[in-house]
Amino acid sequence: MTHDPVIPVIGVTCCRKPAEFGTVHQVGDKYVDSVVLGAEAVPLLIPALGEALALDPVLERLDGVLVTGSPSNVEPHHYGGPPPREGNLADPARDATTLPLIRRAIELGVPLLAICRGIQELNVALGGSLHQHVHELPGRRDHRSDKSKPHAERYEPVHRIQLTPGGKLQRIFEGAESILVNSLHAQGIDRLAEGLVVEAVAEDGTIEAVRVRDARAFALGVQWHPEWRVLDNPWSRRVYAAFGAAARERAAARSRHGSPAHLRTMA
Image 1 (tube, one colour):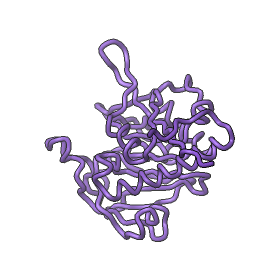
Image 2 (image 1 turned 45 degrees about the horizontal axis):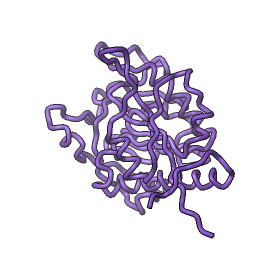
Image 3 (image 1 turned 90 degrees about the horizontal axis):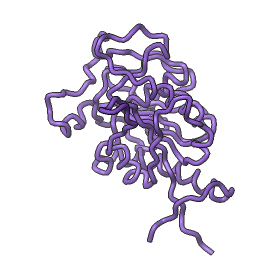
Image 4 (image 1 turned 90 degrees about the vertical axis):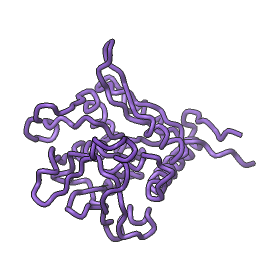
């Protein structure tokens, strides 16, 4: 007897933002759509509840975690950095949620993909630090997007990254030595966390991708935005396909071991 394959459920981290009547938990459509289209999975939004979020019961029901990008930045007290400048966007509720969520997902072997702010959170969660203004570092390019351009144009590829020979990302990209990526970030990795391995760097030396050393499952962070129109970019499709495959593997294993019921392929 054959069974329909299970559809994995992937948690998508939210930001917590002020609204007219209090605050809202929010994530952009591009991240939700990328899970559906790129990973072929069901997205489940994870609210920024901080300590009120029971991590283990949530992660036991998930087959993957997508740590999203955001206009806000990790508060520097989490990595011993200098106070942020005036005008810096912060989201302490998100920090209080994602940093422990990332650590616990890795411990439990839940597949993890971390994008932009997400790769920075991954680095900080594991003990690394951040540059708050990469464009001010000697020899670095300005990795911020041109906000005078239409929104879609800001996601166009603008610079090349070099892939680590023999690394996981290079294998995902079927041996490519370098690729073109978009760039919409002001901050970046400074001191690399001990548990991370560099998978790609920009031509100016900025770390563009990392993986978790000795991870039990897929655990990758990228500084660019593969979620944007994921199916239109061959490199983005490969990243999400690998993430989705890892999530399906976990979903199948959980189904065999009698974990909570999954949605099944729809006719």
